[in-house]
Image (cartoon, rainbow, N blue to C red; front, side):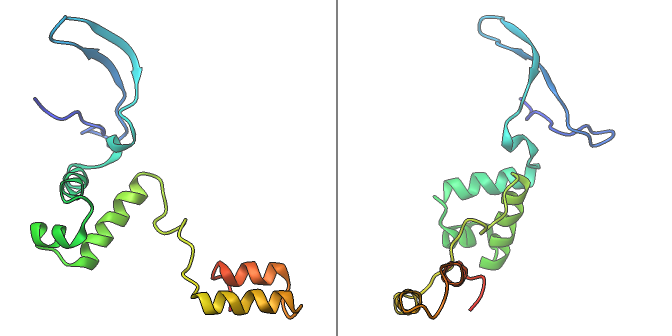
Amino acid sequence: MNTALSRCPVCESELNITRLHCDTCDTTLEGRFTGGPFAHLNTEQMQFVETFIRCEGKITRMEDEMGLSYPTIRNRLHEIIRALGYEPGKDDSPDVPDERRRQILEDLDAGKISADAAMRILRGEEE
């Protein structure tokens, strides 16, 4: 059985799923169905996702299995994250060492910086 296409082979537009069929009971459903978020990934990206899952997300295992470097694997992962509509690292908060965090809070308490400035520094927006 073939994997469903998500793009038109002629014009590259997104294809719509309009019919589903069960071979066991011969039921057919017609309508407009979505292929889900992974339907937008190409074959190479889906193979990467399968390998990522099989390797339990361990990039060192992926390096061995795929014969690729860590940066290449990270770049491919970021491409897939973007293809799914997300921005890699957007939700990550910067690592602020405990001592630096304590100093920022002391400066805030002493009135040396404003609450807004403290938040910006803690988010990594300014130093």
